[in-house]
Image (cartoon, rainbow over all chains, first blue to last red; front, side, top):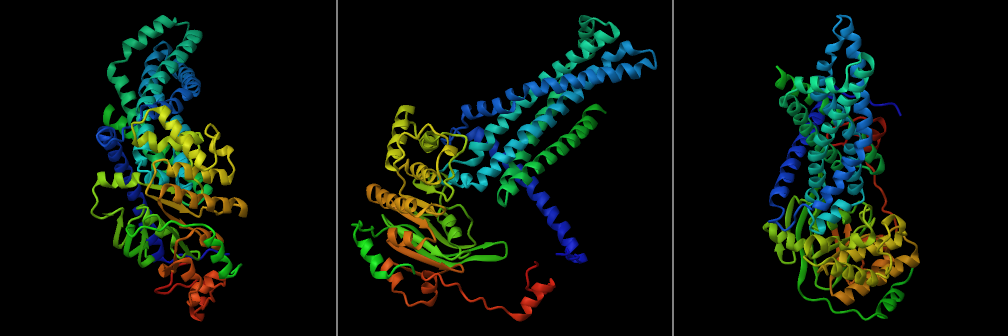
Length: 269
Length: 290
């Protein structure tokens, strides 16, 4: 059937509806974070504590099982940075200074960014799919009727696990990226690993490490909140879960990249 | 109707039914609710008494599932009052609300078992969350409830390893593990073959007799409703058409009630202008967009 042409008024209505939906999502995210903090602080008093076993289970899913892929990707990025850095600096005959570029790029940018994007694709989508499926299967309703707060039971463990594991994975990614880049530098320029490590430690300050890890904390919150908000908003069965999962990944990655730029702008200038 | 009223009543009378108590566990007065601009429930008033099985029936879109969600305090109403176990849900404190929740159980249409947990863990979840019992006692209680629903020995299986009927039984076991005062069942026999559905009806009656709880069942299965109900609430387009015993419902002179019992579809009277608008896709004030 041919699509009906929208009138100007209906177009304005569409824009308005989209804007309201966006503001609503942001609001829901804010409420979710506030509720999570409440349950974290007062759960014991309410006799509904956040279960450590649930947090550990989530940490295993989000963090430990992601180690191999983080190892592979950050290592590859490290080597790629070394290749490009040496290639660029060779123009000026300054390839021995490649360590500076690698150290700053890996610690401040690439390790947190790649880790964030990877966790968003892997665990943010899983979180959205899990909560969406639970919603359409009426499992969330069952929790509510049983007197179990879904935010405390489902969201807080995931959020806490993200807050611990995304920075931990970022730190792991930093070491892997720097080490892999060091191996390439050693092979290409003949700089020993010890000299490379010495140079790297000399160049980097705690501020640089804080910059990378600070970002990863914000990424962790974004991934968890966007995953949950999209999962909780699922409508229309299995197709709805698929759409919510895709939306969660796209929104998380977009939010991570924009936040990364804003963070760099605020913290670097 | 598939069978005549006399046969239905005769079959019902074969089973001794306990007298329901005079006190109401749930009272609803003039409940109005909307989804967006659409009014779903229009001034619904009803009560569920102690130890009674109240069946809510109605055609598709009559508002029975919405009413059930309200009775379980899962939806916000537009107006009206609702008391659950004596507490006005508009004035209830957070702590009291949690206590009320602990006395409610739900067996959803899909079972709503948590797929990442074993059947046993699913059943123990409310105990784990709300009691300080030691794990062994919880396991014993879970096994006892599984025995009630005739699923002994299935505690270590995952929900995906169970059949549809078994999932519903396991959902009942989880719903009754805290010995609730009110049990809600949403379409318990939906999607099941007649034999399994009938066994589930017997289970509902047995649970009420053994545990003395009130049970609210939403169903559109007439045989099932007539078998288990102490009273039936019939909803039609968001309004209560009638509330009465099975006998009263069967003898009702209301055309709408008889149409529902005889499964006669309602004649759709269409305004010709509205029909034309729908075909050409024109919108005018008061007409929803296609």
